[in-house]
Image 1 (cartoon, rainbow, N blue to C red):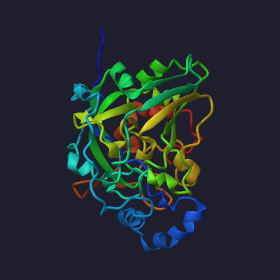
Image 2 (spheres, rainbow, N blue to C red; image 1 turned 180 degrees about the vertical axis):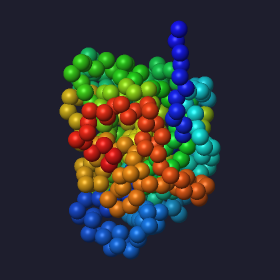
Image 3 (cartoon, one colour; image 1 turned 30 degrees about the vertical axis):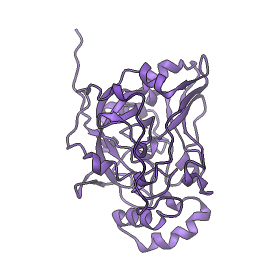
Length: 339
């Protein structure tokens, strides 16, 4: 008899990716030092930094709203059936809130980046499967989406900037993409990479960032049931500011691990050097698991602001998903798992 135990997780993980590392490379650190010195509270530090640097590379809150989205070729697949195993202990963040408070550094550093992503072209879009796989190949995004079993999941999202959301993602388990890719037995990591197009994404002109955006997971993490490839949100195709047409959601990790607008999956036996790790390894590491007891070098992670409510709540270890993922790290005691 199959006995299904209810999972303890509960809470969405919105796209909130990149962090307050506007204080990026050493060239940039000098300019940021003065601002960092003037702000001490976590909320003030992040909000003020975003505001001060928001206009530097295309993130202007006063910009005109993006043009309406063109019809999505996969729109008929939404809304997908909700998977009842993934529930929440808090209310879903309203779409007008979550869709207007986002990080997407390719287009600028403003939290109002939804105004600046109109130039993101999501069709045509191809996804490359490369590296240690049986057959490297490139597949059109619409063919990939239609080949996968779509479902809706409610996930908590926790940004390293100490704010959080709860979002109804639609997509498919990353494990299904791993099966589709057919990696060789020696592959121990999956490296994920976003697009590189400075004409389309003005933020990629910033010389101090190591473009393109790269993230990675171990194969054990990638095949964990929680790891999720996102193609939609709020019962419809994914909005551009969330990382259309394909992004990652790993809700037990800080949001910057959930890479957006993916164009390439590379299966490899070498740990990828990730975007923020390359930029500032003393503050952003490979693992980036949520832990309230391990502060960021410049602010506490003990609590988080629930965006849209003004409420500050205690942060949970692994963002509340510990029973499902803690076992992935039981033999990694020497690693810095929580940064």
